[in-house]
Length: 280
Image (cartoon, rainbow, N blue to C red; front, side, top):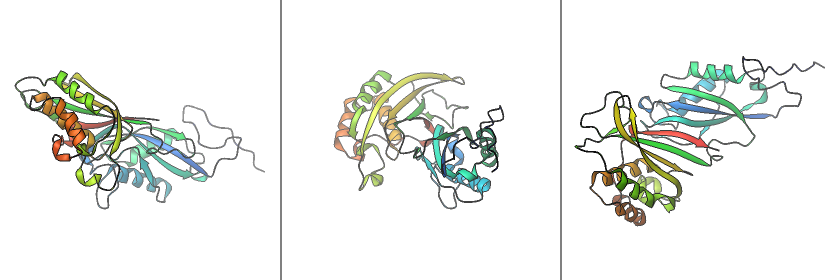
């Protein structure tokens, strides 16, 4: 019988096999992915379209010479960015025998298009799912309120022309109505709410000022267990209406209670939104 080789724990990367125990037939890996949504038609695979999931699965097809299906922690729309999207997939133990995590990550980065980076790769316990194992997700929406349009942040922030700053205190009072478990039917794409539950739990809506690349702005940080289609963008659009003085803070609570999409504010542009992180 051939003697097992020792595990390679050198700087070249931790091997995924050759342990003293018989490896499981299936191994689960997870990627932490960042991407500039400007060049993708959203996250989810679509025939004939360049998407984040499609690009990752194409890279996996090249590496393993078979279709490898992936699961994402969240399905971002076209134009939405990500810093900490998580993508999981399963491989056979024989497929990753002798491969190091570091080298596999490097190969994926070499095979995926510009604007998409695999920031980390790890092995997860059997049964792990990027989507179903997630405890919470965090999104951040960036708003720029200068009198002139931003230059460096134009692709990553919603420019709201204004003669003065938004009323952040009023926006915070409005955001308080959203915290907790509610029916968010008024805060999502109406067609996506048909025949499915629209109950979601928001743990935190926090607003803070930022200075980045010479631009002053506001970040709307939203943390929750899960999100409906365009939910964070409708929240951002509604809070900006309050910040402009077009609506009172209590209006957000009334819109939430109405369960009617027409009662809430506009859907903020996709390019201001970033999928920030996932907690497990």
